[in-house]
Length: 142
Image (cartoon, rainbow, N blue to C red; front, side):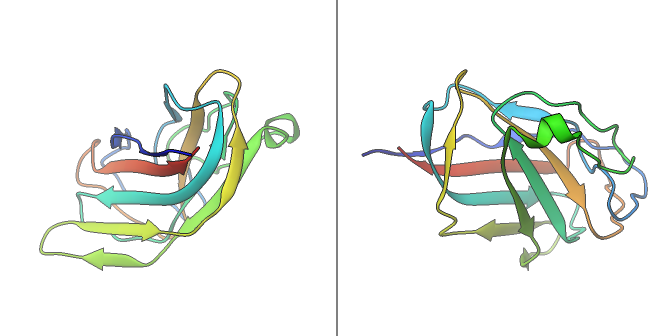
């Protein structure tokens, strides 16, 4: 049994006010993952210090991405590949940035191509200052 923490993945957002329930970032993916394992933690960095309640949709296969700042609505077919949907809402705020972590998740996954796809969704109304404010990492046991 091994442990692996992914490097932080840079996500793309827009520097504009976001609506609750909208895609906060682009669809992205972690690569070179073990084909199966257990997600134990998720860490999200917000360099723009918005600290809005955020959710992350994880999938074992590519899905139809939602345009940034549009209502997130995966298709029925896309949901069949969902690894999980997690809420990130306990932020640790610093002077000009913040971080949110959830631990002890224990969600098993299988991904035939070594990738986990994701998209962030906001439940607040943040206004990112930059298109590169969000970074995410997974802690995996395999």
